[in-house]
Structure formats: C-alpha cells, structure tokens
Length: 75
Image (cartoon, rainbow, N blue to C red):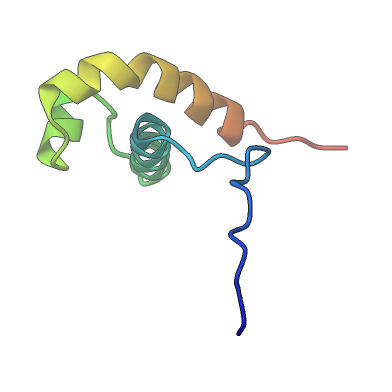
C-alpha cells in the first residue's frame, strides 16, 4: 500500500494578501492612465470601476509605488 505524506506549508513564501493584490492593480491602473496622458484622480479611478472607499484607502500608497516604478534609471 502506498502512503502519501503531506508536505509542510510553505512559510517562506506566503501567498499575497487580497490587499496587496488590490494595491498592485490600482498602481498598475494609475501608471497606465498616467502614461496614456490621462489625469489620474479619484474621479477617473471611479470611472475605471474602483469603489470610492478603496480609492481613499489605497491610493496614497499606490501613488508612491507608481512614482517609484516610473522613475527612469540611466546609467
């Protein structure tokens, strides 16, 4: 008879949280809008389908991430 032993949970790489996934999606949307020449504001994010409560909670930190990702590094 073959017996299987369950592997221990991977504690080194936990799955990303729902908040982190929302945070990344908002940052991607904000960056896409900025590079398309659109004004990035709460109203334009609402037009893209983001709830106002989520915008007020996540947009300050997402804006910081967008700025960090959009900096061009020239060596």
